[in-house]
Amino acid sequence: MPATYVSGTAPGALPLVGHAWPLMRRPLDFLRSLPAHGDLVEIRLGSVPAYVPCHPDLLRQVLFDDRTFDKGGAFFTRFRDVVGNGLGSCEHRDHRRQRRLVQPSFHRTRLEGYAEVMADEAARLSASWSGGRVVDVFPAMFGLALRTVTRTLFSAHLAEEEVARLQDSFRVALGGLFRRMFVPGPVQRLPLPANRRYARALADLHGTVDRLVTAYRRGGQDHGDLLSTLIAAREEDGRGGLTDAEIHDQVTTMVFGGSETVAAALTWSLYALVRHPEAARELRAELDAVLGDRAVTPADLPRLPRTGQVVTESLRLYPPAWLFTRVTTAPVELAGRRLPPGTTVVVSPPVVHHSPAVHLCPAEFRPARWPADQPGRPPRDGFAIFGVGARKCVGDVYAMTEATLVLATLCHRWRMECAPGTDPRPRPLATVQYPRRLLMRLSERGPDTARPAARPCGTRG
Image (cartoon, rainbow, N blue to C red):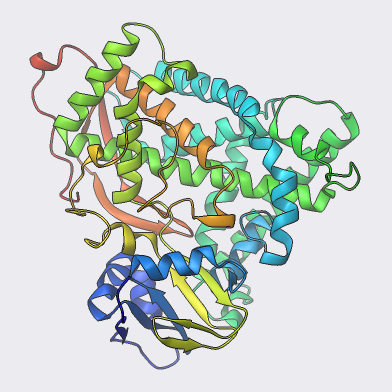
């Protein structure tokens, strides 16, 4: 840890709106420019100052001290409109109880059952594809992830039309959430078409979840899924569980975390493999050696280290979670600057993931930089996607397991190359970033040596 840190201020703030324009137009470029101005950089959210830690030690201080740097600020204020006060968004005072009650839903024995669903949904998607078809990757991955999370949450399948409606509602809600992070409150209350669409999407989303929670509570049966576990959860003394409102918020949080985030991770992983043919060849060689002609199963995960490394490196280079906020609850010193209570701190994983102080040659795609002994599990160091400390994501192993199984399934059967119309520039949406338009042409796999090089796919990474 350095003896002293450099504090700075980002240039370009405008009266009243601050840095809202670059944050809305080119947020990732703006955030990645901040380390040039110091280890802790002041930006303006409207007229309010906020601080971005650009040094890994400062990021660790913020994330580990969740009592002082509590979840709050512009991001979480808006995020709670979508997911409520669930485990991923609640304040410090509510977290320990919620974590204790939700943790059994992600016990190893439960995860084994969820992994079977993940592998099955991946196989279904792969079987539905055909050679020569052009796939818009992010919508395909989002649909897959949403079907998977709804099956693991509600083992009694939602009808296809209900899944499609959930998908549309989430997309509209998250798009509205992104805009509301930077738009003044009075504008959000105007009877504009965008505001009306946002309100309808939230009502539809929450209505669907309420209906399912009520049906499960009345049925009283353990379906072996996440919702059954949440309903059965009890305090250590056997009394007191989650209320229906709390279950609603946990379910909504899980649908969000298990759909948009996983879909973005898979989309970037497929993009990275097209951009880096040698990494793709190494991954396919591993799949051929382990699987031969059979399908991927959860039992194969320990023998797929390269596949796991590709997922992890894709998450580092193209982190889906690009921004979240914390608010100080007491006076605290950060990088030598005294922050009063109520100060907003902006955490941006891309800032640290792309730092040469953390990773050698951070702009390069190097799957081998990660340990190969735990595929399907997130690394401990130099990796901010799932958080650290007490607020580390409870579903991190779930997400990594799904991404690894899906990537193995698709790459075992299909070769991909970019099709005309692809625009891989990152597009932020609420908490995730994904390519603006990633079109892939599919072809059945043959011997690697007999195939021409894939068509180049943009220039990032």
